[in-house]
Each structure stands twice: as structure tokens, then as C-alpha cells.
Length: 183
Image (tube, rainbow, N blue to C red; front, side):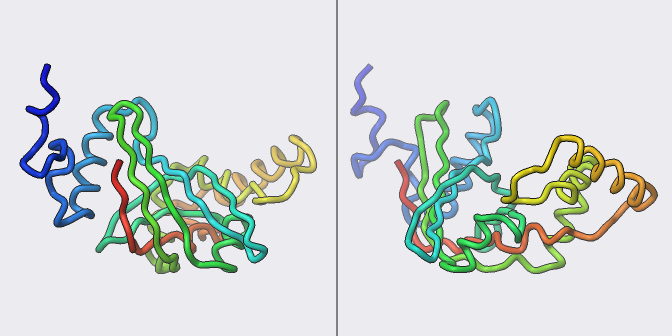
């Protein structure tokens, strides 16, 4: 097969056709990834830098897109959150092995509006919400038994409530895209 036939008049593969609107191109690639990736096509590596300029990276899930903004959620007591407070800039990298594509996005971070974060939190399965309340982010677990007791206590107290308060997760998760790099 002749690779040149797959290139457009700019010499680019068809997957780069909409270069005028990179956010729209991101949506096209994400849509394809949702059909081909085995697990979590919305998984991304989030890179932050702390106040001592030490970088760190971890995996999070993209939970929404609005007006060139990428929404993810994090616990406000986590290391990631404290790094974002110290330096409200981040880089994201989506890697879709099945497509042999990746997208790197750099930008500034702002808070997701509380109402949006609460709606997201209460859309999660009941057990997931209990787990978010029970886990104490970025601190060593005393024991498995301690975690089990917290889960049992919370289940007892939140058993009848369909909605319950967000345990301060998710307010640090809006990346305003400044630059997209497709590869």
C-alpha cells in the first residue's frame, strides 16, 4: 500500500484534516478512541508542578468538555490539588494505543463551579460516593479495618439519602486549553 495516497494536499494524514479547529479535532479523535480503546478512552496523564518546581504526573479521567475546557475531578485534600493551588497550570496527555495517537494539552487550571461538581458527584454510583467520603487522600491508611469501619459508618448515615454532599472533591478540575499538540 502506498502511504502517499493516505496523505492530504498538505502532506498530512487524514486524521489531521481539521487543523483550523483543534478542539473539534480533539472531539473527533476522542470519539474514535471511545470506539476502539479497550479501557478508559477518557484516561489522561495529568502533569503538575509543586511550589518547589518538582513535577509529578498521575492518571485521571476526563469527565467533560465545555468551551475549550477539559473537566476532571480531584479531591481537594490530595497532593495533586495542593500542587494545582501552588501552580495553577498543568499539562494533559491522552494516549490511545489502538489508534497510535496522542494529544498533549497545556493550559491553566480553574475551579469547576460547585453546582457542576455536586451534580457530577451525585451522578456517581452510591458505592463510589461512599468510597470518596471514606478515603482520606494523600495520607497513609492506618489499616484496612479502619477504612472498612469508615465505609460502614458512612453507609449507615447516608443509607436513605439519594443525594449527599460532595466531600470536597472535584473543584480543581477545569483546564482551559492554551495549546494542543497532536501526534
